[in-house]
Length: 172
Image 1: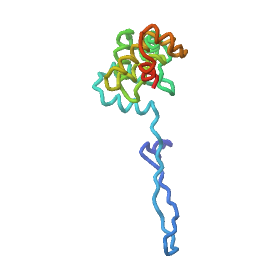
Image 2: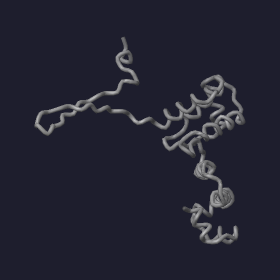
Image 3: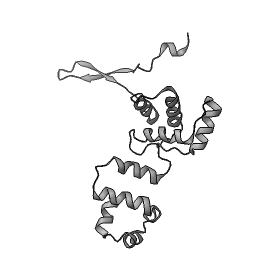
Image 4: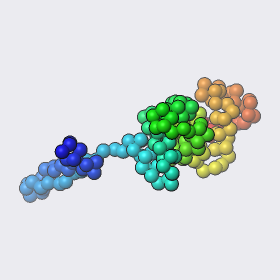
């Protein structure tokens, strides 16, 4: 037998903690210890809820496996396509990868699967309730991200002809 036969992922250790009762007699309470689900595990669980064919499931699992601990996809899609061809013998176009990635980007947490901060923020905004402040925030990020990230707010105010209060709403 191998070690894996003795343990299951469902096995959660239980500990008994001694607790004093009002009468001074010890009693015990059961405490379960559980592990937090990693981002990767959470995304793979969410992946199972989608009706992917086996090809797209392999692609999605590969993309998820290449996300960093913050949920960013730091390699370009052409590299992912090359890796899938080499490692999985799966010839995938960049367009196919974009389609699967867009589904991953709809998963939780918002912003997962982004390739840069700008994309991450835009993905989060798309999940928010539509309204004037969300639309303005998206416009600022899409057109003035450099100025926004460098806090050159005066340039944004002049270029967009908006009030400081409107911009404050975007920043908040």
